[in-house]
Image (cartoon, rainbow, N blue to C red):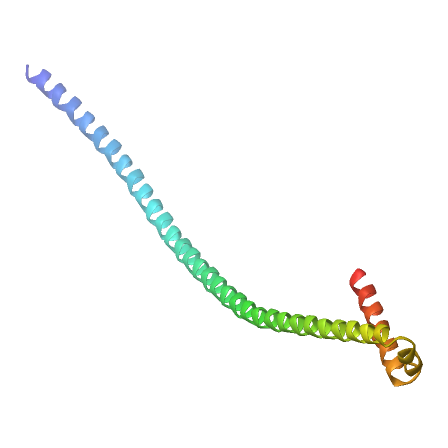
Length: 143
């Protein structure tokens, strides 16, 4: 029986030593995996910081572009306001010229022959100028 106990102890010792080596190998592999995970997390942290910096730059550039667009839109608002005022003034001038031409044409028609004789002077020249202006403006509008 002593021999049997000695053999069992020897087998248990061999199994324990084998188990020790297996556990040791597994712990080394786990340590290596942990070091690799730590290195990967460090790299990810650095990349996240770079992405964060890039995102901040993009937001800053977007804000600058937005502010620039707002400034330019305000300038265009002023420009379009000026163009509108010029259009209104041109329309008023056109209406005045039209009314003057109509008035001159009516006076010429009402004046009859005496007006035609007088029209050979300054009044005729003015009436011709107004009529020509109306024709030119009509052609410009048509084009």
